[in-house]
Image 1 (cartoon, rainbow, N blue to C red):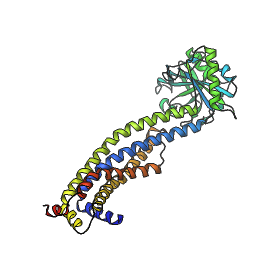
Image 2: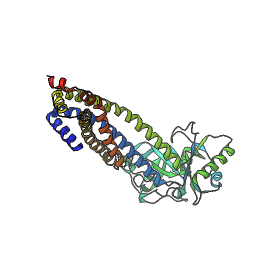
Image 3: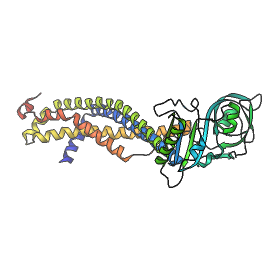
Image 4: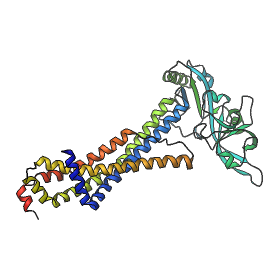
Length: 395
């Protein structure tokens, strides 16, 4: 029976191709927008998860400002923190600090000398103890005995025209370039210059100030439990909670929630186009009922029941929705693939990681069929209620 209904639906659509395709496009646009936005959100989530997996879930971050407080970003918020106190907390294996600043840089040789402001990151020498994914493309990492040495972010050699073995001037002080950071070797700091924390304190006069502290949790300890101990110890020592203690898992959840809210908001906007597409299906089906009134009368005269007529129109409208949904799903996923390729090739960042979600494809197809069927419900009921005699006399 269903096969017969589908055959009649395909035949009806083929007889009214222009109108049917215009109706399908209405559903297609809505599904394309929804699938593209949802899949882009999933791609962002995959990229975030991949980054956090590289960091590892045994890290705790401590930065200035409470969760409801005044954290203003890495280049403006700094504070003094007792790293010895943090290191003494049970479960903490290693403690390393970072200081983010924007500094005046000069590189290259006259007349090709280039100068300007770039991000400069002061790192404690043991940073590789907590960041195992800190990778160098060339050269070496600075040691505890190094002072005026620097590691360049991936894009800096091109920006300043310098490389490993040459010198870069930071706030008037010459630094020897000893290494080149691999792409995204430390988050997305490809445009920064990394120097020993002591050296940055010296040239800027910010001794003791840090932007962030990383604590590595020892094996066998629970990161959440250690984080609570850190929070309690720091609050007692400082007399106030002017800091935030977060585990990598906390950060991952926070970013995931933000992405989810963005997805829901954009998906709601895209859903409006689906509503418009549904109205288009309803209009087409009402027109089809009027055009096929005599046909309905003949079908009823030879024994077709109201339910048969209703199912015929419901399946036809649902099939139009399904066709639009299938094409829209393919286009939406194609847009996601294109966005991933563009960001990786031209923007050179891993903010998107493509991966086809089977549930998204199945859900989009099912949803488009349901939207089409529901849009055809009222026209189908109208067709089913037609009386055979009146339908046969309709002109």
